[in-house]
Image (cartoon, rainbow, N blue to C red; front, side, top):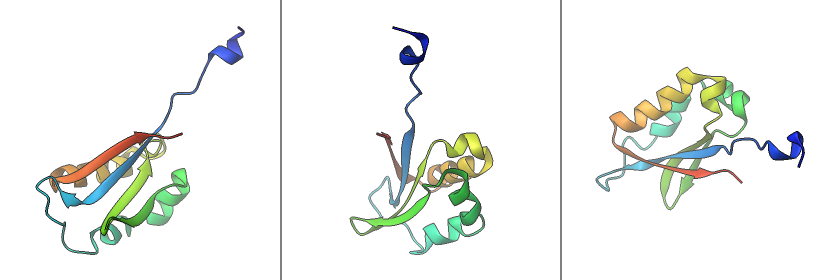
Length: 96
């Protein structure tokens, strides 16, 4: 085994903020994701290429890669803190 084959990149995580509170209530206003992303959506899209607003199971979600934290920690922190302050559900999974 040589050095190049033994070093593997750290897997990244996909983070999903779901428009439902930890109490099971749909988060309002209904345009929360668009309002949250509007000030910096174009910049964030350029930072990591995978910030998306989607609808899953009838709920809006914001999905992004944790690499955003390396490219722009302020924006990453803003998204995570918004979810915490508003008691939104957050899921994460390893990117394949």
